Length: 266
Image (cartoon, rainbow, N blue to C red; front, top):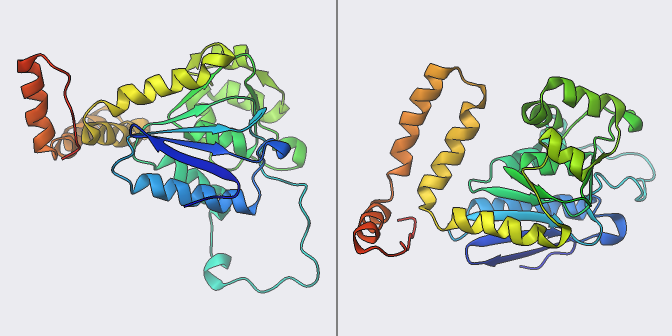
């Protein structure tokens, strides 16, 4: 399947999604929005994919919603009933699509991430950046409050006060400050960002897939639980991790035979 506003490839169990509107700093138009939703669903349902990397073409990661396109003309059509009952909007559904990908997700911050583009990066499990990385919440200066999950992810990553600072001022945050604040999980040279992300993805992809998927589900679920409920959730999660009997046998055999295991997710 080919796409018009992004590139998608899978190699060695790692999916790489590249937003491909460099002339617009990969701003989200209707096509990119729909294709990104399709790709998230594609990764979610592909057992061959064990990790996913998101990045942008050119100088930007994603500059948010594209506000430069043409506006609809004439009288607005009556939207379908389900669309009128939608209480998430495309921005909410996009955040859910990325957040609920069942495998580890890594954003390579090759340039500016603003507005919904910043939210996409925050929805990923990890972010790799360098001195060229730049974050900007941007919503307030457009007369908007945060969307695409930013108000959920940002305070959990860097704390309420720091999140308030970035949202209320809409100031630029460069790569080094992003690293200090905790927006970036790895800070490397610009030329090393993709290789660093692929190293993380490869390490995750080399481990039992069901264990990784179950581990991500437990980690996300326990973000808002008290300690005792989190322990019960961990115990429940073990039942999913154990649903790969062949991988359990392979792990034991590889240990005894002193070789690298070959996990299949079965």
